[in-house]
Length: 611
Image 1 (cartoon, rainbow, N blue to C red):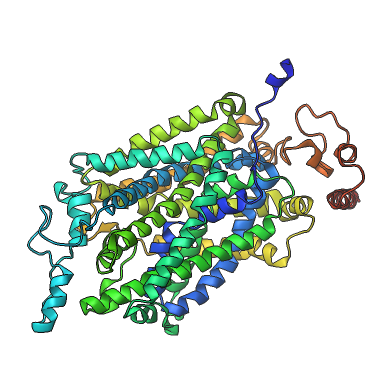
Image 2 (image 1 turned 45 degrees about the vertical axis):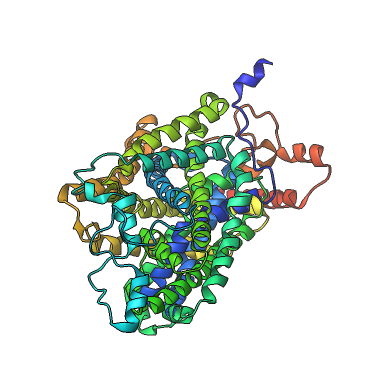
């Protein structure tokens, strides 16, 4: 009985076969697919944008996605403990957690806005349909008026505002109560309650870790597709829809000569797949050792790309209809980000028959898209910290998750104020900007250069039964890090201060934003100092020792440890895991053959090095 206390509680695994795949799809397919991709495509050459998009997916997206899944599955560790691979760089894991925490704070605020609109849609008449409410100004112009007026006399709509825009800025945000980022004003209680509700939903879903969130994603990862198809069919059958789609897809190949388009494509891939946030690594760490993540990589990355393209059709067909109704060109109604989700699309909904129904569906889709990405952020933070202190925290995981949710909710309260939108824009612009790039570039370089490409490929061979081909090796060694370096340099050179509408942020806010990004980068040198101080010997010896994998690095289960990983686990008694395997399964499986091959290869290498 006493032996149980010497070992930490079991981490647990996914309970169903599809849990992992659906969690990854739910994590990658998020709000950005609906509100960033279509707009990015249309501003960067329409259909021609798909060329750099798929090339960047091949160079940057797929290889790094696979690398992150491999690291997680091989070690069964979260984004902090995984740095047993090279303790000198543990700061990278700390940087990741800082970035994810900042993103989780504002991402849940966006979910709170979605909940607000979801409840507002439960009426017979949408509140942003007409002017004449207390929040409307004299500039407000109803599109019904325009349509009736156009027949008799043309209406000048250049300096007017749609009712949906005033509803968003003057009623939901009440932004007129704040003069800028330094003057947040009072808390909007209805937004605060929505934020509380969204944190409560997230907590209840991650309460039992991947055992509970792995079941919720069966709904949240698949349901958006159903709604997306409904919105798509509804959109394409509207008159004028072809105008929008033509606008979205007409290829302008001259755009491909500008570096901006390639950078935009790489950025879209980078953020859309969620590499570097630790979510993929965390999810893969709950897999069994021989799960085929090679296949899963292609399913998720290509599925994500196709979803983005589909979402573009659903969005632009409705924008085409809207431009026809208003009698203005499509580019005047097209917007990206929150402006599309909370102003343009809701306005388009008011023009349809059964508008509350379509509005409810649209916001329900955004809710399910946002939630499973948020589960991943939270799971990442909780797993990272509990893997560091498994004895204390694993038995109290539910309590610890609650503590983190409450802390992040309290930090997010500033976003529910009248000036909260300014803070949200600041967080969005800086929290996961260059800091995230630095984290991913460092990870890539450490795995290939410090840990060693040969060794990493051998680990994958042990796990999947085959070695990654030349395509993956070339990307990991040269193409991916080089592309991301170019992204980082481009981001620094083309730096533009944040703005929201016509509001320019003051200098102190800019500095605060840049510090937010730098702080996650500074974790890396800070981690190095700590790691070096823990070792003994001269400085160079310490650095060398700290950059080598720890003794217990490798597969978490005794029976999966073959070759160099034999008997390096604490409390390991077995001389050869192969014997454990044969006792357990009887006879040799294909994975044992792999293990024998890997052992033989290593013995040969050792003999060569001795000669």
